[in-house]
Length: 304
Ligand SMILES: NC(=O)c1ccc[n+]([C@@H]2O[C@H](COP(=O)([O-])OP(=O)(O)OC[C@H]3O[C@@H](n4cnc5c(N)ncnc54)[C@H](OP(=O)(O)O)[C@@H]3O)[C@@H](O)[C@H]2O)c1
Image 1: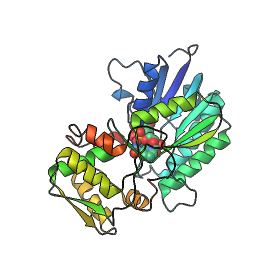
Image 2: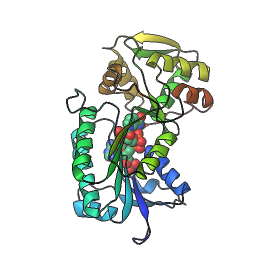
Image 3: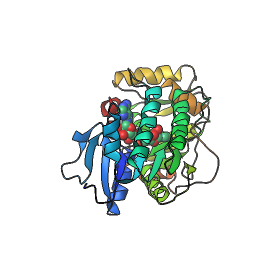
């Protein structure tokens, strides 16, 4: 990417939502630079310029954003591990926005989450609220998109539920399983991101598809679509994170943290209100069952 040609910056263009956004931009003929922890994951023929996502050098971070029309920010962490916490992710996000302001970036499209709150009992949701605040304070023109759960492409959650349902005789849900999940397809999210980049107002929008099945309904949809014979059973809410923790440990991974389960059971993965994206979660499951859950997708190996 030469400084004189217009380009956009996407964080994590070799990971999940960032790769969908980058694909969408490249299809439009846009030049793309990515800030990433994994420049070595660039496919051999990738036209994307990869620059390290380094929060320890504020000047280099600002330089890496100089000349960019839009910064698409997907950077966040799913769960804390060692020194990497939601607090550090929040301050890193703030640092990224400051760097973008210094670099004169025209617009930031930022991925948040449904129902963020500075008063939330959950560090993820608190951090997301504070990151949104830092973005508003940066002075850069911006659009915030709030998905609840992403699916499609290399999405981990739905795939790994299908993986276990294909192999295990039973599949559990925590508590009553009546809490809803409002999914958005990763390509629909990318489309929304690009549309929001073209606007100029500061906006906040839930990025959500048309369906909001309960978790139990989602399991039933995956079971029917994949031909799984697993019996779907309730697990007491208190025991569910222990169970997912134990299976995660067996897989040397993190399946679903206690906080992720509790936030979902509290209804935070759902919003009312109109769909802003077309593809529905269970209809996508039905259409893509043949590939779903054939392989396990390993979160920890991807990011730690
Ligand atoms: N996935 C979902 O279901 C979901 C639901 C609601 C909201 N969101 C939000 O949507 C955004 C994108 O999510 P995603 O699932 O598409 O994420 P992702 O692609 O897995 O990661 C997004 C970015 O964060 C970086 N990152 C992830 N884990 C990290 C870690 N442990 N340490 C340092 N950097 C890390 C990645 O860096 P590298 O690519 O360089 O490794 C990448 O730049 C996030 O803001 C997330 O909060 C996601």
